[in-house]
Image 1 (cartoon, helix red, strand yellow):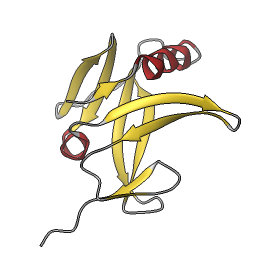
Image 2: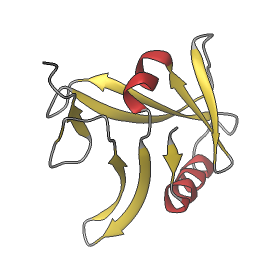
Image 3: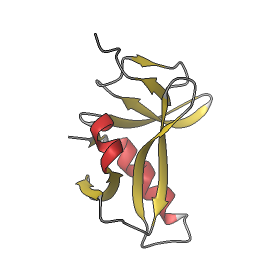
Image 4: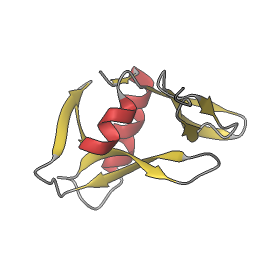
Length: 111
């Protein structure tokens, strides 16, 4: 189960209010690339395909495609601000390694 912290939900609501697509849902996906093998991709998307899963997390409809869902089970997304600004933080127990940037990860090696 993917979880959003209250701070992450507040930031998503704030960002949605600034988009030109008020009907857009929050899309969470995993893309190949980044510092390691994969990176988290966050966007707003009005389109939903038949293989997408829609989750209701803290009152936010979160759309996740099936391939990404397998890599994101038990993911927790938080949001925090520091002297460098604000950013989403990802806590993924499925990751074998996380990049220092916090947005990229690799899977554990299989024996």
